[in-house]
Length: 216
Image (cartoon, rainbow, N blue to C red; front, side, top):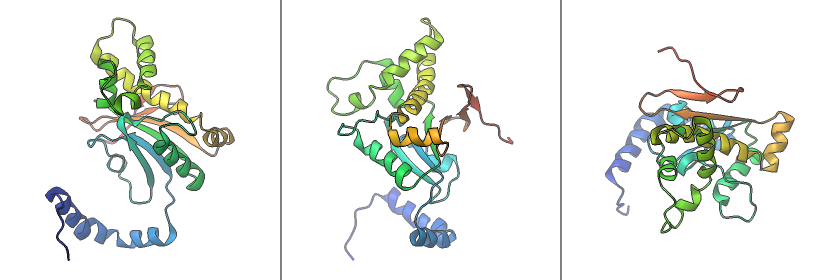
């Protein structure tokens, strides 16, 4: 066999996966290969390596369809626009897989949000500045909620929450989502994960983020 230059961390991780998880879940993988996937939720999450949706929700393969990008953003529905990768995944999850739930999952200490809150877009950026520009609307929402005297830390924290809500609103610009929400066959949710404390804040029907209760 040809030699492969796999990074050691990935090689070791794959061996652990094969010897442990794949062996325990082999029947599940065979079933998924035979019957296909039927996830219950589309999760739009941040690319941050510290906030993995599958770990946060202890999900098994086939249970959640995950789209990850910087700052867990949903672009406006713009056929022919520049952000079709995320939009295509959303369309596939909703129209082909027929997920009954969409969750926008943010997290605390989000670098993408902080970058937009604490500085103007970098004119030298090829992609990132344009991608995180929608956060500007969330910044204004956060300022309106906190007042003019809010410090940078509080403003960044509130912007994370407001950005989740803005992405939820932008989901409704997709006709196939708006139709299903109106029909009651699709629900949109928002949540934020705390990296340091493992807590999860869920957006309530009243429009506020509240901690999810747990035994410990």
